[in-house]
Image (cartoon, rainbow, N blue to C red):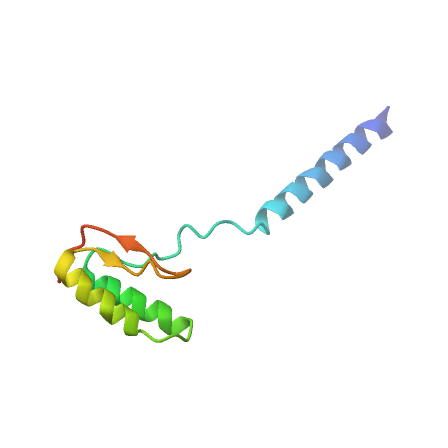
Length: 92
């Protein structure tokens, strides 16, 4: 009887250790990662320039999107995998 209680306790401890280790090493979503600022046309251009530089691309389309954003208030780089369209930006 005493041996079976010991087995149960050891099994519970091992299970708790496995759960704790798995939770500690899990790859959690990076929701706390800083998101680019798209509150104004200028901040959107900065985010675009930084993103294209990280990918080794030209930022010429960021300048074209910035010029259009200053006219319309809409950031539109929806041209490819990293593009986006955001309306209602402050024109500065």
